[in-house]
Image (cartoon, rainbow, N blue to C red; front, top):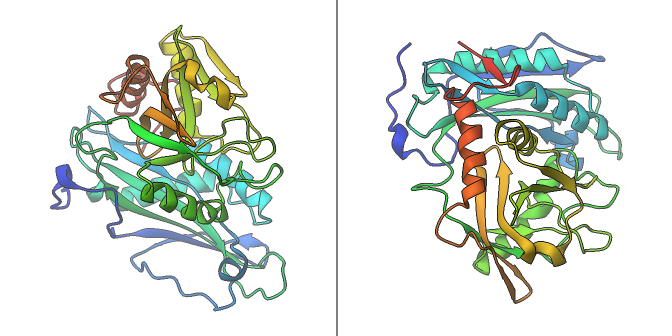
Length: 341
């Protein structure tokens, strides 16, 4: 299969239209069989539920070319599970798990020419999403929905390596104590936009959100979970009912325990203990791990011992091991890698 004529090494992290996308519609209480289409446009009512009351959720995962030339996806079953949780919370119909995985496989196969070659540093980003498509004027769930998947080739999140970033403790709350912080709802990201634009204007790369109830505990950023490394090399991750259960974070926890023999703590992490950690990182699909060199809490600078020059030693081991698994250089745990072709 001949690849598209794309300068893979100079791809940014942005949208590029690919040949095919997957579409399935929910009507009269059931999902149709779903189809692949070349049409990238969506036509919906001006009164569609997604436009009036933000009834939408999404997922994000990647397809890779491994060292032995296979096209694979990383743990798509967990993306399917998380979208099921999101749909239930937003009173949307569940898109069946096996149907979700099959749709991902079908869409990636149809766009295999856009999957970057091994060693290019680029990947094929996959975006499954669902939204209320029928007219809704009273505040209630829509009656009809559309599930779609598009793909786009993307470059490495960090050009020239993952340099440590500076983040700030935000004055904004990311989620309510009993809200939607633990699902991947579009509305969560909409409310974070002002906070991240403000942070960027102030010279920070990201926000550190605290728990909305007491504002004493670390939760996550607008789009990634935190990991911390203690001075005696333990991995610590914040535990909260109002943060998104990151698939990357869960995978790093397993890698730390089973591959690197590290002790792991999933617990509440308090703002006033940050200065005791040796390393910090943000973990998610896009970058895997973004190292943090400094946290600024209203003028107080918390400088991580790992510094501002490069990723911390333990964080680098976690990063190298997980990306090695994803790219086929290291044997993966059973069920983690879905071979497309």
